[in-house]
Image 1 (tube, rainbow, N blue to C red):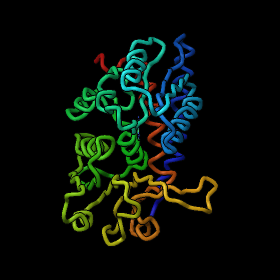
Image 2: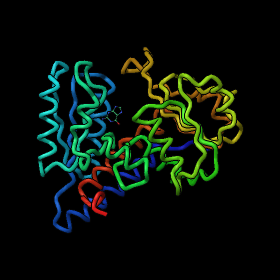
Image 3: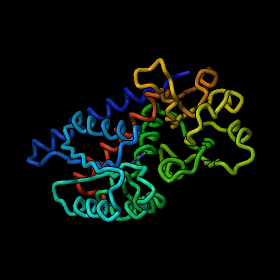
Length: 294
Ligand code: GUN
């Protein structure tokens, strides 16, 4: 069994990005600039956004954090989006999800200029991805593919089972795994809450991508010997022995599944750091400005 070290690969990726930024600066360009909008004080969102700001520093980017309280109106949030769309100093931006219930996430996502949508959530990016055109790929799926590529894990003709059908992970990673090329060319099955025989389907998988947010869902009896397991789960479970009072729990029963695998990602230190590194890569692409010009 080989552990897929997302922390190490994300570090490499950020160093590669930082080197490209220095080349841009030497050529007289300004630093890439990522803005993040954070509404309210959700613990998970606070951590993600703080890590994004830290990653910007590591890559040599400029970053701006715009905060609003949870009672911000939809109109005010939309006007922030419009001003970021029109700010020539900002290359890309994200609005951290989830948003409070009184705000339509879809409306906010659709208000973002797709050329600055470094999360890859706008329907233009989602649509372009699904037909294989250049676009911003959403960060978690892109990070997963980067890990498969850097560990040279074969995907062509393999059975890839995706657990979960979210717009952020399940659907886009399924699209990418079936696209022509590498990583890709896999035979993809997407399982979700209405799939009756998930265990049986998983047992035939060469690659399982678990993204359903149910701690320990994938058990050893669901995994074939030699499979590759990508664990996207990051549920916070109370843990009094931790300073923070919680620990992150993946969707895979790591202890019992790992001995059966060829490759497996840990939680934390697997997919999580790759999501942020992929966002940095998208921001560099946005600053480069050529993604939609081909
Ligand atoms: N919430 C959970 N994951 C993400 C992400 O990748 N981007 C944004 N904007 N919000 C999230």
